[in-house]
Each structure stands twice: as C-alpha cells, then as structure tokens.
Image 1 (cartoon, rainbow, N blue to C red):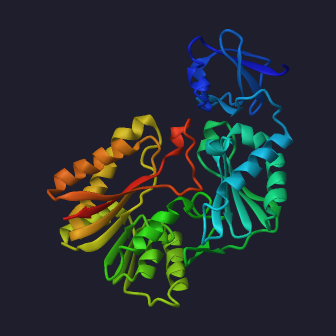
Image 2 (image 1 turned 45 degrees about the vertical axis):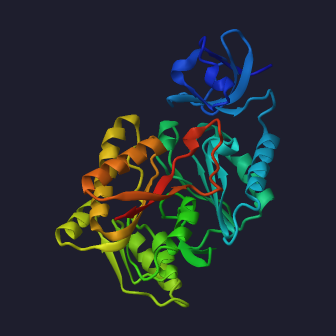
Length: 396
C-alpha cells in the first residue's frame, strides 16, 4: 500500500471502527509521508491494521475526514460512483418540485460537498480540503450525470476558513445563471437568488415543513420571523391566511419575499401583508408591549451556536425568542419553532422550549416533531448530519 500514512493512538480507532467519518487532531499518533492540504492518507490503528482512506486537513481540528473504509483507489471513478449513488438515492423521494439537494456531505460519503439543484442550475459548496482538491473531477462528473445548464459555486462560507481555504464564488460550468431562478415546490413558485442569497440561495431542508404550515394557516393571522425570502409566508398565503406579517433583517431578502408573494398571488388573493425590516427579538418585544397578538407564529432563526462555547448563550436566545412568541399567541395558537444549530440536539432543544413554556405560564403541547427533508438524509453512523429540529406547538 503506497501513499501517506496516518497512525492513530491506541484506543482512538474505536470511532473509526464504528464508521464515524471524522478523525480529530488529538487522536493522531504519527503521520508519515508529509501529506498536504486535501491529500489522501491511509489510516491505520496503533497495531498497523488498515482502517480507512481519508483526506488530510492540517489546519482543521478535524484533521482527517474519511472517504472510504475500503482499500480502494481515490480517483475520478471513485467520485463518479459516489455522485451517481447519491443522485439515485433521491429518486422517488422528492416529488412536486424541481429543487432538490443532490449531495449532502458526509451523509453521501463526500465530506464537505453540498450540491443543490434549482431547475437546470446546480449550486455547489466545496467546504473541505478534500472536495476542493477534487473539484475538477467532481464538476466533470456532475455535468455527465445531471446535464445542467450551469454549475455555480458558493464556497463563500465560514467552514472553508477552518480548512485553510480561501472563500470562492463564481461560475464553474456553462452559462452564467440569471439573477433570479424560478423554481416550483408543492404548488408554490419561488424566485431564488443563487448568486447573492444565503447559503445556496434557498432552504430546501424546510420543504415539508412549509407545506405543513399551509394546513394551519386558513383564516389565521400569521407572523413569520426570520422570514428570509418568504418560504413559510408563501405557504401561509396558499393556505388562506387572513394576514401575513414578516420580520427580516435583510432589505434584499424582504424585497425578494415581496416578489415571491406576488408570484403566488395569481390564483390566491394576497391578504393584508406587513414586511418589517429589523431585529426579530426587538420587534417581538414591541409587539408584546403593545399587546399585539397572532394565531400562528413561525420561528426559523439562523444558527445560534457556532461552537461548543456558544451553546449556553444560544440556548438563552432560543428560550427568549420562544417565550416571546408564546406570549404573543392567542389561546389555541400554533407555534412552528426550529433550531438549525447542530450542536444543540433534539433533547436539549425540547428542554429549552419546555423552559419557555413554563415561564410563559401557559399550557403548551407538542402536536408534531419536525426535521429536515429526505433529500438531507442522516447517515446512522454520523448523527451530526441531523441538524434541523423543530416542533409544532399548540399554546392554550
């Protein structure tokens, strides 16, 4: 067996044998061959037994991420097979849409690679040293497998800095995408800004939860906090809401939200709509102080916990925002509440929400537990992939 060698300390092979794909710096006993950023290394236990093939990332706390637990070549054919399997994995799972997550990082055996399809445009994030090194081969395989008009890169996210990589954004293949791409989802239509929007431009993980909200919106006054470009608001419209109020800190996102509502107001009349630019925490406090109330509230905030050191502070933020929402709901009101912080697991999030319920002095019941869509699968040996958690709550 040729190539670089990564040798683990005694006892630190357990997670690898359980097929977890991460190897932290503290688990490494020795490194042979001087691998560079993104180079493939052969992983061995302290007794010299082969365990896996991984890529090396010298600046990251996660020093190596595993490609495969087999002794097989890491080459162009390897990526062709992985991508093909991931795309086939989605077949039959997602219907009534032309916008799907095709590749979901470790869950598809391609750590650090995100590929979202919006109609005939693919948007990619290369967030790790390994997929960055094999970017050319990955793009070539995607062209052969999907035949898109465009492949646009949005590798302008924070995780690249931890890998020692520069932020990148731009066209990788085909023609430059239009400023706005129209997609459809469960009978709704959306404009997506893949060039300037958050992440890849649209949150595909909330597809099923948006559709569910439409079932609770009929003749309701709906408040959508952290509304971004209006995914939940559009489905409130489709569901027959009496009124829709949006809170979003980005002016550009609010402008696109209004376009998305108008796009869907052809068959359904647009109810009274208020778009408020500002900080959701502050605005909810003003609503509380003025005794303004709603029938249905959506809380889909950005990630509050970026590191373990931020978990306690994030929990305080989640409790605060949920307590405010509970106080603003009319008796029998519905709260859709979410956390996308991977470091806050389902049980901890439920405890935080329970604390808010206690402090609100109201009876709050779980109607349904929510999670990310099936095109964001969770590999059983990599629970970190289960980042999105949520509840539908009835507040009496």
